Figure 1 (cartoon, rainbow, N blue to C red):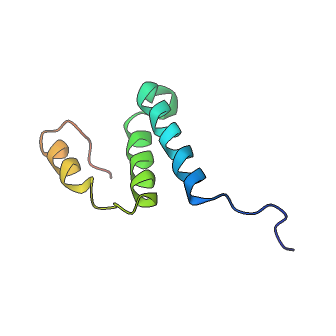
Figure 2: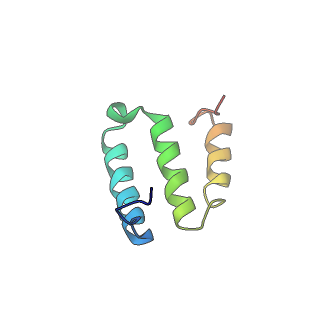
Length: 71
């Protein structure tokens, strides 16, 4: 059965993720803490075509033990 609603545009996806990241950063405990921040950032950077932009900073934070490594 074909979908009756079209998919949202990339601009709408980007706006949604920016809003979500803003909310996650303001209330991390409500969203699941560090994991929610990491996932939202990863998704936003993917939509922006910058998947590797965060890798160096993540490694630096992990090295300083300011950020947990994923299991």
